[in-house]
Amino acid sequence: MNSKKALSAALSALITVSAASAIQGLTAIDMDYNGDSIVDTFDLVKARSTANQADLERLSDFLLGKPVSAPETPKEGYTLIWSDEFDGTALNMDNWSFELGNWKTDDKGNYVTNGWGNNEQEFYTDSNSTVNNGVLTIAARKENYTDPVQGSYEYTSARLSSQYKFSTCGGRIEVRARCDSGKSLWPAIWMLPEDSVYGGWAASGEIDIMEGWGSTPEKICGTIHFGDVWPGNTYLTNDYIFPAGDSTGNWHTYSVEWDSNEMRWYVDDTLYSTQSEWYSVNRAYPAPFDQNFYILLNLAVGGHFDGIDGIYAEPATFADGEKHFDIDYVRVYRKDGSEFTPTAQTSAALSLYREGAEAGLTNKDGCTEVHITSVGELPYSVMGLLENCSVKAGEKHTLSFSASSTMTRQIEVTVEDSSYTRYISKVIDIDTESHDFSFDVDFAADMNVDIKFLMGNTGEPLPSGEHDIVISKILWK
Image (cartoon, rainbow, N blue to C red; front, side, top):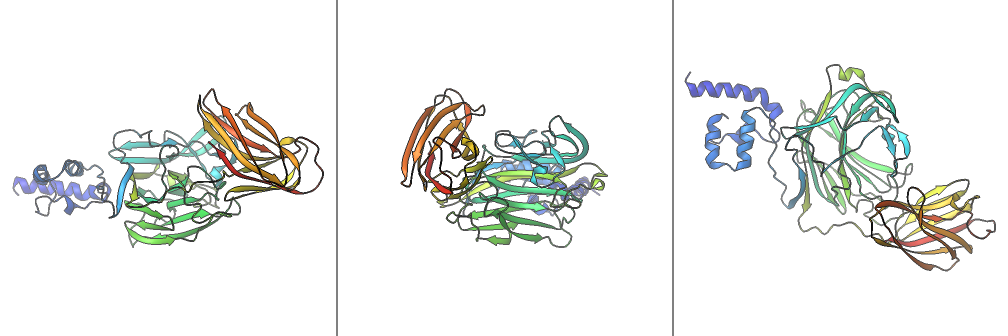
């Protein structure tokens, strides 16, 4: 055997061994630059005179057995606007933040429930992910982990979020990924609203681009959640079944194309689901999917999706070590010519707080309606809240709204920081006629503030009886 054939044979053997793990969206024929049906160093010589730099680097990495990212080849009619190729040796913190712990918390960090609301068993850390050779790896591990606040756990993993760093309204969101299998593993590529303008989950929506069952790696699903605040929410979903012999353990491209009136889910550009009949209660279509959504990547362990009894993790899954969710890239495209942008809100949505009172709150387009059966004993026994509004030092903000009530009464309006320091405190009179109000406030420091409409036992004594309050055109500018 001559030296060229010997070298080619050796390299071909290397390629055969490494190709399944190394090629992501490319085949050997794509790199056969000299057309001899063998991918070897002679193709590298040819590529130096014919290929662009990116393709040359891919061929070099391929010959060395390194993971090779697919070149960026968007569908016709789309333009790339944001991506992370996971180059380098560390996560780009301009693109991502770590979501930590096991507890689901509110915007102020207050405990809501454990297990992220799904009975998940893992504790998310900032040390369960790595970036190497163009691939982000999220590692789920069976290991003891104790947090001084949240307690002790037997599993760790990672959850990454682009919130406040990147979000999009519509377009094509595309992720190239693979995941180890095993009972209780739950890989997910999904999206949540940057601002929950239609109310809490799931009134403001959720988009699941890909969710996988570790126990059944031959299928994944794509889902949207919408409707009303839990438990009045609902969802639409469809499964994708891989061809025989294929699974989530191999590299695949998962994507959703999101228009104002339709969403389409793909695996490797094979369309498997189309949805268009969503809603957000009391809101105009296409709410809630007419706002900016950010991206999440995580590998959960246990929980309702694939846990034992909908809760527990399977220790045997980790008998041979940690399990990986590998992501080659995340790419977001804007549809050419699209004018799909977030729908402007004419009135901010409020959330309800009650303490020793009976009341209900409904957000609608342009207004919030509060039905009060009993006001309780305190001014804040009934409150409408606009929480966690970010302000900067030296900024001047204006709170404006209109208000009416079926009963002549007073309510109090405040703007407060987390220490309950009040920057506005106004008692106003309202009656059956809608009245306009506007208040200015300056801030001397950066902070987050809450806007509160106190509708409990406020001001002058109230006659007994049910009544309704309507607060409309709520704007904070």
